[in-house]
Amino acid sequence: MKQSLIIALDFPDVIQTERFLSQFPSEKLALKVGMELFYQNGPSIISSIKERGHDVFLDLKLHDIPNTVKMAMAGLATLGADMVNVHAAGGQKMMEAAMEGLDKGTPAGKERPLCIAVTQLTSTSEEQMNKEQNISGSLTDSVLHYAKLTQQAGLDGVVCSTHEVKDIHHRIGRKFLTVTPGIRSAGGNVHDQTRIATPEQARSFGADAIVVGRAITASKDPLKAYLDMKAAWEGISC
Ligand SMILES: O=c1ccn([C@@H]2O[C@H](COP(=O)(O)O)[C@@H](O)[C@H]2O)c(=O)[nH]1
Image 1: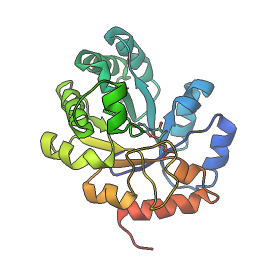
Image 2 (image 1 turned 90 degrees about the vertical axis):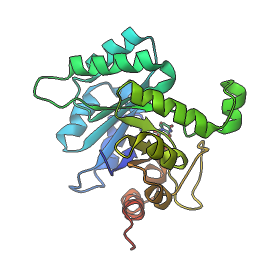
Image 3 (image 1 turned 45 degrees about the vertical axis):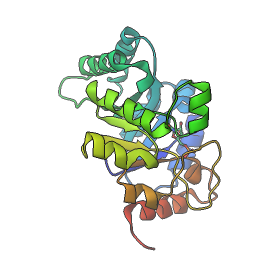
């Protein structure tokens, strides 16, 4: 899923998902299945997307006691997703347990899914973090702290905003994955996101993958919106 533009399939059901995907003839895609689609449709959504040849990021953001996360991850590892995630706020032991579960549950001969941790959600502002989470200091420091904790726990990378990518790569190394949601084209509707960036900014800051939802899925012409975003992300001028 490295260097991918990952489309967030935030749909309530399989019919709307299929209708959306039918507009992308024969192109291999990187797709994100989140809580909305997974909780309403169950694990079979993963195999049906994989059967079409696409890569899947299963974005359930696990956050619970270590044993619960370990056992849940052991189950998720059997589904065939290419990447899964947790909340770094669950702590180092919880993240280590997630990795144990993934190692235990990955079928023999298959690759363990990549596992990344959410640092601070891209909808969170520094002010909100200070007041509501009672974390003082800058948002960047909090993201860097969680990124370091994630690395110590042995995960493959983090979810962060584009604005923290350079600091993370500088502090932790270029191989540590940075997956960045909150992507909008210039002047696009921000919706509920706070730390947004354009695909061009994501590329220039060195993000490893971008996640794009409504800028594509809510567009009148999703295929065109996808191709425009992808060209901007890949640095191709149209
Ligand atoms: O910090 C995070 C973690 C996950 N997300 C997810 O990415 C998409 C973004 O959708 P847009 O419509 O492009 O805003 C969505 O599925 C979130 O659950 C995130 O936005 N920020």
